[in-house]
View 1: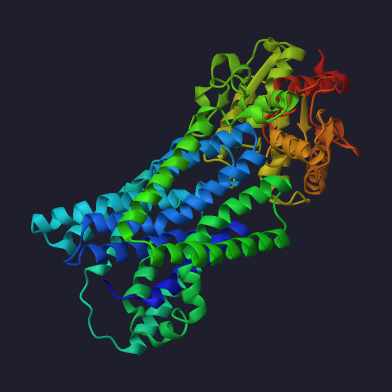
View 2 (view 1 turned 30 degrees about the horizontal axis):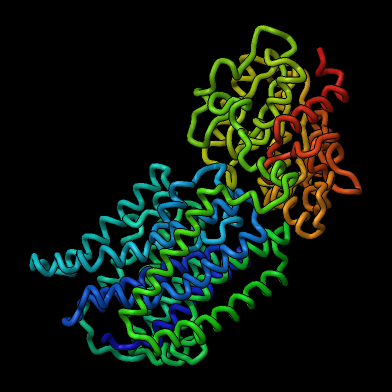
Length: 628
């Protein structure tokens, strides 16, 4: 057996607290996700130490992994399926079923990697998203003992091999980031292997005599590197990036010097930190599903009080899981039988998740009227919005716009310029004004603003500059500027960055020879989606009729609208308010008027075609210049 290290449990506590802080309070702990990187280094160190023991056994190794990981995982995954049956839409329940099946196959990271994309559902609607890291660790457990055995059989120098693997994996990770494959760098086990192998390398080093003062200084330096990156330096964009190196190095310092540091013994090895470390695994498992389901039920981002309550509930469940499930099972049952039973139970629950997926999220559990509305989760949002063609993906150059996207040779052309929300308005414009009049210049994640940088998608600045050049060469009669303005957070007061960009854009469009500019304000937003909100409303009221309107908090959106309208009108552009068109004191429209289940949007805010026609007709009725 390897020597128990209470300071490592304390380090686990820091790692899980960083992750919880990031998920519950991202503004306060903006890079707390690095807690996962700390976990990877710890796992690499401990697992390599176990494998290097003379009495290592593959059977006992994997049995111990099953005993350690499976009981709490089965409980959390099973509870998530039960809650999903009650409260998730068929689309979200279907996705949860896939997540459960992937978790049982030790491959959730591969699932989320395959799903990554612009229209991938929000992380806040994926109850088991956090299991991606468990997938990486489980794949490490499967391959690492075999690799270590091969190193021994070939009589290679273990330290040199692990050093080479660490370097190669790190270079692989950075190369993926360089070529824009950030999802692969984040989820791939080969891109993350350097963090685990760095811990493994640490386990091969000789344990020299170290003075407590020196050790404490190194522990402080290591913890400082972790905390500084978590609170001030790290960025979720393109992670793991170069700032992951000081996190891994800091973790290695704490592990290497922690067992001879008086400071570590008084802090990391204190009873509270050790206990938090012991419950860190079930706490990590519980916290994210609870935050996700609270968000889904709430229909809005959680308030600080609600976030704290969610974390308290997670902590309580983690303590119960540790004291009443993990510890009793470990003490009362023999290793091999327990491993076999838990593996079988995980297989059963994985099969249940697969069944949920194959049955499409079981819409039959809901009344027919609601099923018709929730079927919009499978809405074909691409075909009539010219995707591909006039609706560019993030990596596409503006030169890839098809000829049909840009109309010329007539004096009444209407150009729609904006992001995916503008693309979804284009079918309505074509139906009301005629397809031969509509130029569609749209790109994912790019508001129609010259000079737009972060937090928009990569390439927006160059893409929008290219669109302006197209407008100069083929000036339309009118340019409509539209986007999900709420997705580009910034102050819109006079002189702010976004206000200046909007004014510059309007001036540049007019200088290009365009007669009129129409700015359309933000649409109402239904979190996490309109179908989900309708389901929660039905569960609350148990009414067979879907509500025509839903009350949503428009305070933040109205503030954004006021700023945009002020800039637009002062720059000589016309302005149209979607909040005034679609919302009233009774709430915001959920369906097209006089319909039973034709929804306004299939997700949080992209217009369906019938909703786009509704908006286009309002444009026609209220803007004489747009008719001919």
